[in-house]
Amino acid sequence: MTLLTARLELIDATAETVSLELRNVERFATALGVPSRATWPPPLNDEGAQRWYLEMLQRPGSIDSGLWYLIRRAPTRDLVGVAGFKGRPVHGSCEIGYSVLPPFQRNGYATEASHWSRRNDFH
Image (tube, rainbow, N blue to C red; front, side, top):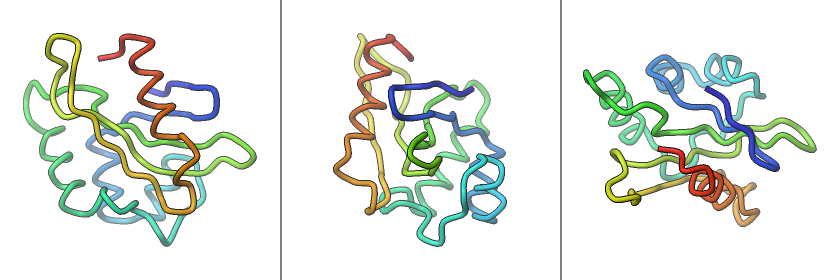
C-alpha cells in the first residue's frame, strides 16, 4: 500500500521488503524504486529493530501497515526514513516511532507522516 502526504510517499513495509532490507540494501532500494544509500538504515532502525518487525509481520494475525518507509517525492525521490506504530491503537492512541537519516532530519518528515495518519484516522 502506498499513501501520499504533501511531500512524502509512505510505503508500508511487508515481510518481503523487511527481508530485503536485512539481506541486501541495494535490492531493497530497487524494490522501493529509490536510489541505494550506503547510509541505510537510519539510526533507530538497526538490524535488531528490523528483525523484530519482520518477526511481527510473520506472526499469524499480525497488524498490517504498522511500519512505513518515508520517501521524499521532490526535488528528487529519496528514501529518508521510517515511521510506524507498535501494536494496534487502543482508545484512539498508540505508541509511534520514527527514524530519519541524518541528512534529512529536522525537515518535518516524521511529523508529516504522523499528522497524516492522525488526520485520516488511519489504524
